[in-house]
Length: 117
Length: 114
Image (cartoon, rainbow over all chains, first blue to last red; front, side):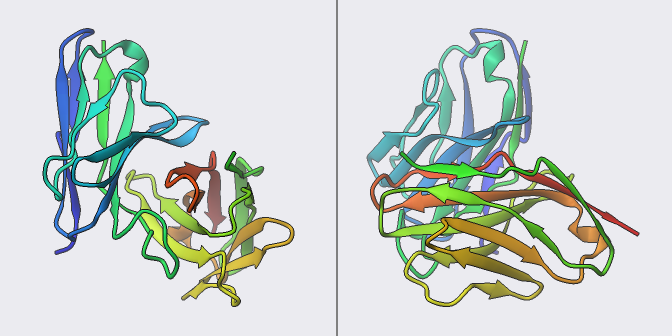
């Protein structure tokens, strides 16, 4: 089954304790991305990756790191989480970054609900 | 800069009626894609429909259609024959060839009434 998986699905942690949220896709997609969703703000892009070893900042990258060492995996790292990073996080992937014909349609993982105390 | 605007925070529609969810966008790029996603109360993001900037026809997917008016920079989602299961949050999104970023609107919460 074609899918994007994220782990963990729920996480409660404390300020300053490093954490990693994993993301994996089995569709051989080139483009992967992380978003955070907050009430009234919609989804905001944190980081994206055009391909292996190619990453770039989205609109809200502060406090986050990413890496893309393999095509299928795109982990999100919070080196020192703070309460303002409490949010619902989504990983997504698409065949390409931008194209025509729908090849840039993103498919989302189930989400990770993070609470930082 | 890219921008997506959804001006309707919430809407009600009677079951079996049609409803239009508004979305306007702003970009200076000529090549771009527009998307609509549905987020039910369970939280997952479900892709509904796509429209490319060079597509001459409005996109349709079953009961969903996208009313694409390029000159007005609008990409409204039309849901025909609403069902109770259509009650959800709906997001419009934009990506452009110039930035490779994706921008989402703030969403419209649709409630279908029996």
